[in-house]
View 1 (cartoon, rainbow, N blue to C red):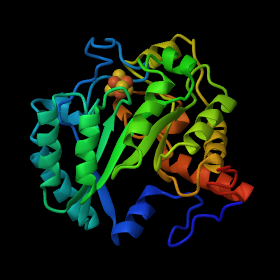
View 2 (cartoon, protein in one colour; view 1 turned 180 degrees about the vertical axis):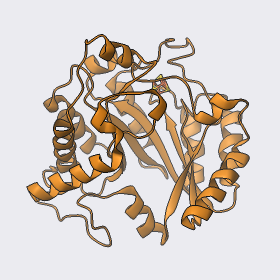
View 3 (cartoon, helix red, strand yellow; view 1 turned 90 degrees about the horizontal axis):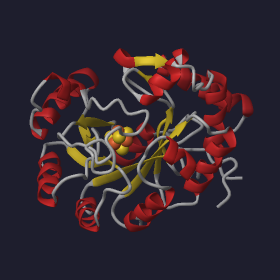
View 4 (cartoon, protein in one colour; view 1 turned 120 degrees about the horizontal axis):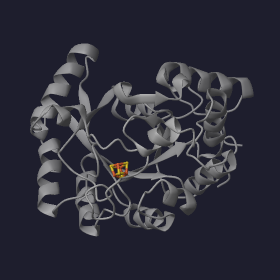
Length: 312
Ligand code: SF4
């Protein structure tokens, strides 16, 4: 059995905040950027409806009008974090929609604008696994020689039947191919999964976690399946055609997932966050801190930790 997470980390899993603090010697904050990208699963290239849980609004910034430049977005967030938390270092997080979906020169200019800002020590680029060229991987690899670089691949499930149902527009193979092309470079790979998608059993979700545990992936974000206003999931929930997880089911499933993941995989997220204005259900999911505390309590009750059931 592997050892529990050690060092200054008092949690029973390797959380992102502690990981960054240990690596850089201070707290590092991830600053969200909306660089104006769209998504091939929304603009008609692959589909128009998008994934069934995607609200398609983009960031709050985009909803208010013309987007400020990347440098201006970062300057504003940096100022805020500096005042509130005394922050000194930042990761520029290209978050909204598909952040590798555009001409190479445009991507390069945006990423380099972010990296040129004072105290920005790295990049995180959120994208789809079927939407990243080798040229862009090489670009990110180059940045990764001097900076801290993550690429975040949305996957959600390793099961093609689920990917088809949620209208992802790609299969599991597309994801493993993207991971193969990205691995072994100066790029850290984070994968997003969702627990509680309609039609998936707890065994299905655990199978996804086991498959990810066997891949060269350094980070994971675990989301709770939500019904949001303006999404297909929201409509299905209102019509009574899908049910969502109870808090107990979610907490137990997340603990099961953590047990099978490698002990050194960085846990960037353990539940959903935000969406207050369009949040429908599950009601208990609104309180992120309560969910995180319940996960910690369950790990403690089981006397278990991340990696306890990991089989290399
Ligand atoms: S890939 Fe992302 S941005 Fe595109 S439709 Fe799905 S959730 Fe929305």
